[in-house]
Image (cartoon, rainbow, N blue to C red; front, side, top):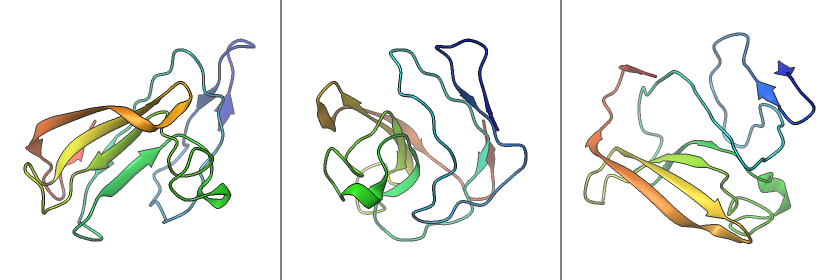
Length: 120
């Protein structure tokens, strides 16, 4: 459900639990100067040993892979680190900055996620 409390505000809210699918889009919102996000999740398993993307706000991946018009845009994105790196299964937030869509800012937490635990 997309809501608005003013002409300069977009609120996107899911009305039910859902299971994400690779390459799916779940709504649209305007990218603004100030943004916030809140969600609950349960991480049940890995789908690969590489980077696991939990969410990414940006341009559709149909317009290009790994570039400014596609998956390279992250306003922001949340990832789980690969099992091959230090601190595997830890969260990483990646944020594009101005015209440099490839992330120039990244933050990681030092603890690993656990399977089957609800996070908020």
